[in-house]
Length: 170
Image 1 (cartoon, one colour):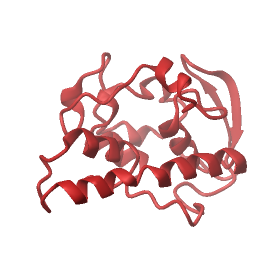
Image 2 (cartoon, rainbow, N blue to C red):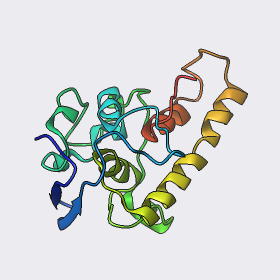
Image 3 (tube, rainbow, N blue to C red):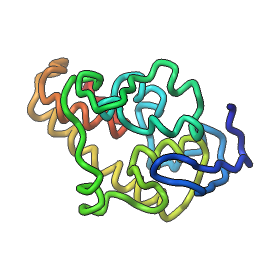
C-alpha cells in the first residue's frame, strides 16, 4: 500500500481500534525544522530495535516495505537489537513516567512512524520533538566517555540513541 497526502488511515491493532488520522504531508517530508532524525522508521526496524517486538501488529497501518527486512520476533529478543542488549521497559513504566502522549499508545516510535507517514498534530508533534531533542544528551555522554569509533562502548546508550533515530555510531 502506498500512502498519499489525503489518505485516511484507520488503525486496527491490539492496542488501538478505530483511531483514524489523515495524512497531510508527503511521507518522509515537510518535517518541523527542529526535527532531523538520522534514520527512517524502516531503517530503524532493519537495523534492529525494541528487541524485535514493536509495532509488529501494525502491518496494516504502515508500509509493507518497512517490514521486508525488519528484525521482528513473536517474543522480545535482545539479540535482534543492533547492539545485542536489552532495551525494553514495560508499558506500565512508560505510562507512569508520562511518556505516552496523545493518540499514540506505544509511545515515541509510534508517533514517529505516523509523523513520518504524514500525520501532523501540532501540539503532540511539538511535545514529541521536544522529547526527541532532549534525548541528544545521550550522544554527548558517549562523546565524553568513549573513544571515537569504539562502538562497543556504552552499548545500551547507543541502542537507545538508535531507538530515538539518532546516530549511535558517533
